Image 1: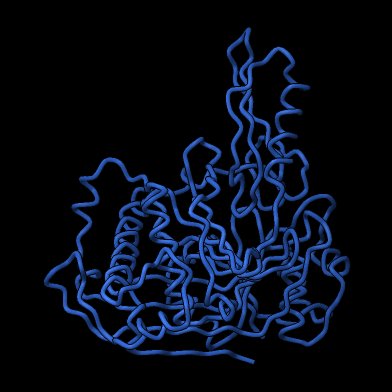
Image 2: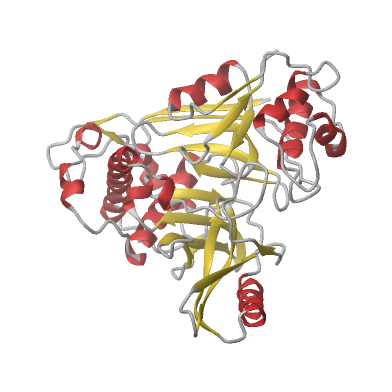
Length: 412
């Protein structure tokens, strides 16, 4: 079954001509691209209103919710602040999380939205990383312990310890879900390790990402201005009455680009009904993703062990896209002989066309395989992929377009 929504003229999804045409000159002149916690909170609150008003899958019960103003700060392994992770509560219950980029070079401000958040063990992971650091370097001095995204989307603790004699620094990583140590080595498609998100951003991508952040900022300011015009404090829980007030208008002029011409907003969403399964081991993300896709396309559910074997998996390593295709193409596997892998993932239209014309596909980060089963398109302002992630427990979330690096398209 396909859930498909196209809306024209919703206030909260304004697509401003001025936004699309803003040159990157002003952004390039700015030397500090960091985002403050106060800015991030404004973006989180405005986008929560945006989600409630447009009501994509997973946000049906967010009316009346509020955001904790004190985020968890997630760092990159290079020590730079990466995300502000805001918790969303309703009646004291945690119902979601919104990750806001801590730097404009990451692109649109909202990076990931969880509507069924999985608890991770922050304090336990930090304590264990410190414990391991002390055991492995008893004469060392602990410099810092932070929560990091050590290999997107994996979260853990990182303790930096400095040898008092040599001055050499070492890093200890502990996964925040399993509480297992992660080796400090470059992660690959088949072996666990760590990767910096900042170091993979090219100069060309930075320029483009700065434009995307500006668009996000315009959306946030427009929502905030219209809320103020209607006497609504976006920092308070969002009521149904307030949503009706904001949804009553159809166009709005930009508050920062005074001469921008407002045009009817564009919003499109398609979500395919793909099951979400949990991977059976830490290295079964490819088999688990293929299992979801097999259930969708063939309505059967082979075991992950069978799939892993057909992918020529060798424990305890993961599986490359090349080997994964052995299962996709085999007549005794998924039986989709024309399935293809690709690293050309930079075009948004490709996502839309794939979902609409073919169906869900494997969406991979440098170290992890998931399933993309839908998209949300807000014109120039924001765009998201609907991801079914098998780790650590099968769950779905909305992810900013641009995080996946390779895909497997399913073809008969």
